Amino acid sequence: MNRNGVMFRTFALLSLYFVYPSQQARTTTERPVSQKDACSFWSNFTSQMNDVYKTYNYLNYNCTYDPQKCNGADCTGSIYYKVLDKEVINVSFCFGLRINHCDHPNISMDIYYADPNNSSVSLTDRIHHNDKKEIKSLKMDLASIGTAQPFLFFHLTKPVPHHVLFGIRLKVRLTSKFFGIESWPSQYQQDIVPKTEIPATPCPRGVNTTSPPPTAATCVHNPVMIPRTTAVPFPIKSPSYNKPCDMNALFSCTGPNEKCKQKNETHGICVCVDDHILSPNTGTCSGNQVTPHWIFGPITTALPAVIPHTQPHTGNKSTSVSKSVLIGGVVGGIIFIAIIGVVVVVACKRHHNNRQYIGRLLLDTDEDTDNVI
Image (cartoon, rainbow, N blue to C red; front, top):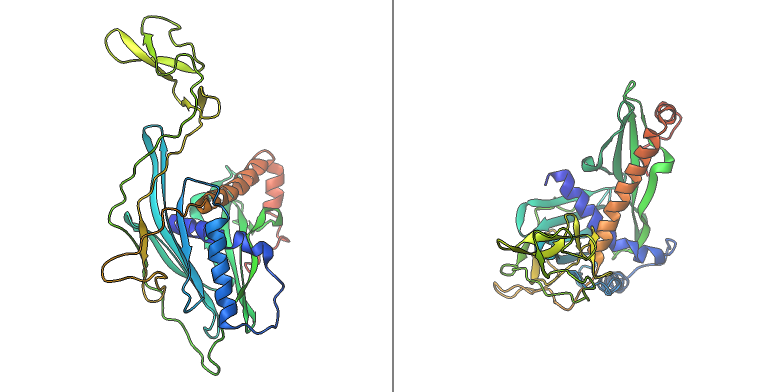
């Protein structure tokens, strides 16, 4: 996976932090913030992250914060996705953020993402206000008209000494093949993370600081995650599924969307036809429905000094993530990715079906092209 792909995955996961709490964000206030206020925010925040999607039972996921600094959070998790006997997804990860709110003259945010099973899949980056990140993997070609390229724009300000405002906005840049004219149509802009108020701990008075550059973060799994599966029971309503069938008979399998798969020289067994599997909803073979089976090995994080590990270590022993903590946070990340994809696809489809409109839109130089959020 290239850097842009890793960056996109990082921001997708990072967005999960604020989707729920941002709905409760208050208007920025002049009220002084104490260390207790900031710690309370991150404590509640990680608790909400660990609880809000607890009804999902197919993810191992845990978020923590550093109670000494109270300026960020870290998450660890793993996904093991199996469709019947075929492994589809087996991913472990860690990601998180650290807000450098005392930096002068401009505050910043350090974010990281890493995969313990693949050292090439990692990212550590520093974000400032008005930064934009290109999502190259979602670039769309609009045939002879031009291209559509999505970007993530970041809002990171400190309007008062006690609070940080953070937000992420998706914008799609349309580029015409005629003279390379660019536009940023407002109808293809969406807040991914609404501007969220974050309490900030007090900064030392009269001291101008700049955080050292972030160093690479790594995930360490303890010691090796061995994926296993458990059966997800559901009734089989097909009269013939997984039963012997006659290879020479035309309709030996009577269940819907079934075929006779050869097992020996004379007989076979009834299975689903290609691109179909046994559905837990109908108990018969249905198209493109999957049955997840999940069990997770313990995952821990090992982070550099700039992004400190939030769980204590003793010697070489790692603190494993509790297996009882199961949340669907990454599902939100997948939904986030899907939203961006849908925005771009819908935009391209509309313009592809109406080239006269896209030509006029791309050539409209009155459209806002300002990169500032």
